[in-house]
Length: 417
Ligand SMILES: [Zn+2]
Image (cartoon, rainbow, N blue to C red):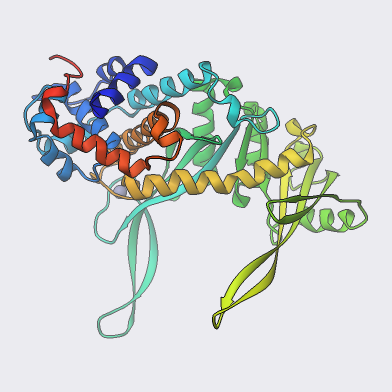
């Protein structure tokens, strides 16, 4: 069967995706091109990892695309205009429906750690520019050498977003993303994101939020606890007395020790510690000291080199009963998730590309790219045996889908106007 046709069959069968995309509205005042033609083009562009609006516009000239989308060629300007006049809430709703379906189909069960479904929050800088500016731009002063060799200071504009994701052993999904406003702190945008997750997905959708060290503040922990989730946060040495106190008290404790993939791990926990915010009550710190040997090649010789790492995590009261070893697993899983989702999104989905410099267009573009990433992952990793068994890479699959687009007579229209 034609792979592209198979992809859309799968997405329709499992998620009713064509119906969902047809329901996405826009805010264009005098629309010339029907919204579904634009929206199916933008989403198919993300699914097929087409990097820019210009490339996408070129694709819309092909017979395969036109048969699939049911419309003639679309200019990059028309696609950009559709992004600017898009409705982020409608695209978020498509993404949420996909994730809720996965949850209902028990696909997140394998992603649980010690019975807990964990959401990771992370920020990503999308792009920077020295000349362009929109009302959503953040700005910073930077110093660069001038052509005359002197240092000059200028303003750099940039956009950042916070992402919420769940990672499993075989796929990862993104639940939502939120732009960080001009001059705004990351944690503030993260709380706005969590507030929306609670409204859209409900408090029971997941159990724990894991964050990096700069979120470890009293107000943030208290707000997440109030929303109904526990927090595991990285704790950095330089920030708090709680770090020192935990280390001192732990020195007298018997550690839990084990070997994991060549690493020797010593785990300790100290409870009932005071944090900066008394209203939070007593907190727990979980400490992992890890040692392993890494081989380095020096002058053609393999030299074993001892390595160590020292992790400290702060856990909020709601997850006091979670065993320290589960906290360790949650803390470590952060890195895998971050690498896989952001690497893929950056390399293949133009996460750091600005398709249209406008605050609405940026969010709509990112939501569609994220949707493309999630759906492609699910099709490849849950549905296709060739990928699951390692006979085909994701990039091979993408090439295969583009070839399938060339066999236009095998394709069917996604909607009829
Ligand atoms: Zn901007």
